[in-house]
Length: 256
Image (cartoon, rainbow, N blue to C red):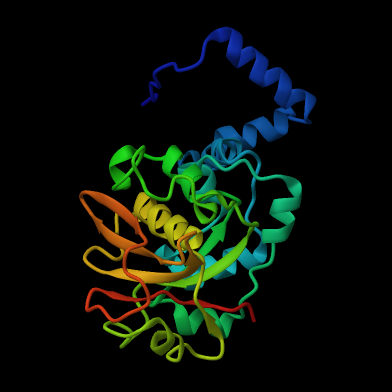
């Protein structure tokens, strides 16, 4: 039985696309391979490649995905959910995941492997639905340097929950809990990971708790992130460095 597909492109657009493909080297033989591909698999891969701006995962990235599964937010997810438009230099910087397979195996259930692009907290907030952030125009951090910091492109391996036993402890006590291969990440990375993973999977981190980050606001207050319920993610600066039962500390693995 012939499959009837509803038309989404005009005849003119189809002609233009075909001319581009022929100029790029499409032949009758190659076109037939697309036609004959099982379950339209090859055509789907072509469309996916176009939608990703030509991005193709490297061997390192593919192996990392095999290990991490849904706990990986890679280049493809950043393009889809944050509208990232990677440069050749950025793709080169992300081509090799800087964690060994042993490290990834150890962290595959407790951490998220994230390809972080240069985006500030304000950039991220502006790219997603309003309800994903608790505050907007009236947010205390709108003019804070840490919220405007775009950082650099790179891979991060962020813990999905506060460091174990870090609740109700001071900042110094929490730092003492970190392993030699761990560090407290910037709020930008925590926000990027929390929002990105939610968009990709629907899973929320830090729904009723908060985690301290390495940033300090202009008034000397420690920046924390959390409370990610239906009211949206909260970037806070009122906790200070003292003890509180609702706040732990965030942690990320250092590169191997």
